[in-house]
Length: 434
Figure 1 (cartoon, rainbow, N blue to C red):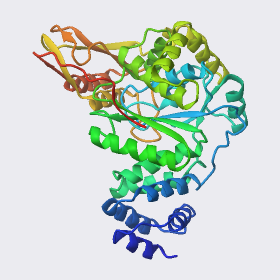
Figure 2 (figure 1 turned 90 degrees about the vertical axis):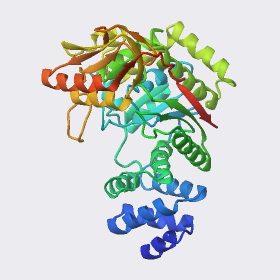
Figure 3 (figure 1 turned 60 degrees about the vertical axis):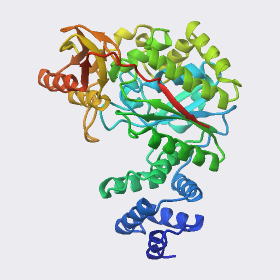
Figure 4 (figure 1 turned 135 degrees about the horizontal axis):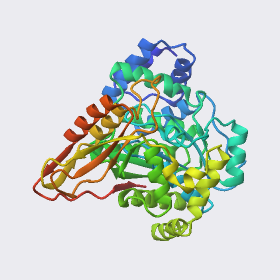
């Protein structure tokens, strides 16, 4: 085969065979196909697209470009969860201990964040001593023993995706549905779960801002999962305003713990219950959503979900006292208040700008070498539809650098839109793809 011929074939609108995709992806991963030819192919795919079979084959080829995790030695159905990310998304920290407290086996690989806040790993590392640097043997053993483990994603997992994404990022070829879906799912499939629940965000703070695009991505990923023989379903969820009230790292862990104590924000609690119910159904532990939700709520109410979080944190070296008393998770000493400019109602919050305000405080990374300050963050007191009085605090910023705080406060103020009419916030669940 010649890459030149494959580029021409795709440019002319023809479908690539499984053998051709395998040859291309494995050759590119080994460095035998140069970046300039793969760039041309990515651009051809952007213009011509890929059909369902091609997209599935591309995903499987990227999955097989490196190591895959073998979880077959763990009894029961292993269910994974993936979110496309958003502002205030601390879902895994509450959701995974909750579902595993009911007997579902959770073996999850997560990454660090590059953007407005840290990823799940960064957030969990706000807990003193907590580590995700686990050897594979320990990872599997921990899942067997307590039902849950979380480790950092290894460089050997789907290396083709890492290499191809870096190329797409600098050649204007990121926003193509087949390439996005295969990028996400190649890593999920390599992680070895039997079933996958996807949380696809839509709205001003999401990667896919248009609900139609979010649904198209969800449908593409569910098709890929089924193509690979995995039970897969997706919820399309609202990210038109931050999820919950906390945005940051330690402050988000606090909120996740509060949620397992039955004191979490309504929208965040609802999302956790909805995603959890789908995980229980795919894991064979419930037949219907209502039954699953009832079991999940009971695990919160009777404290078993919180106890499972304690076991999880202890097993990974973390200070369990921070789970017992979340106020022990240190927040920055200085605070600044965002005052309402007038009487009225919160009509809209520009979600992405709240995330950027957190980034300005030091809660995220602009480059991979940036160091996150886990103590900074934002606590929202008012969300869409809430009434406000002039001068009343709409949000508290936890600040370790006053200059950064002033910049973040200004940006956060511009993100809030207060008017005379009460807006109705959208439901957290917008759609479902099965």
